[in-house]
Image: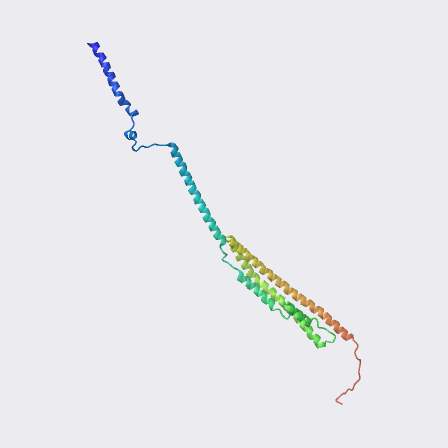
Length: 258
């Protein structure tokens, strides 16, 4: 009886294990229902994901490049606006006033002005019209006229010198202002305009220098002309003195009202 039951128990155990095995292994080999039927299926593709990331990175890089380009263009426009900005300071009026003062002093030159026709006329009248037939009074009058020309030329030269010296303070102030504007220029146009005004200031100073040289030269020329004419007048008077006269001619004389 015992030998007969043991084989049945072994066969029963084997049957139970065989039936239970699919149930134990089913989680490993069984797929979800929605995956088997294709509803809401999620598939992860690493290659596609990497390509999407690379595309997004490239797009972001392009956007950054465009932003940088727009910033550069905006800065370029700002710089161009600065370069085209005009200098808010002008020294033209002050320079013109300085030049006009010097011109007025030159125009007030006494007797002989800085004019070719006037010079020729006055020299012909006061310095070139000497002869043996001139009377003593005429010689004295001409000599005084020449002396007045010389003194007037010296006075004119000193007045021009004083006017030019008076312009020094104004020119120094203008130069300081223009240098300050040049150093504070925001663009190329402002710097160029400041430089041009500095050149104009130098031109005005050069004009003053020319005026002084001309006035001094005029005074020296008048002095030399007076000296040369005085020498000629002395020669005439000497010849007149040495020329024999008609001699003594006797005549009636009365004394004591008799």
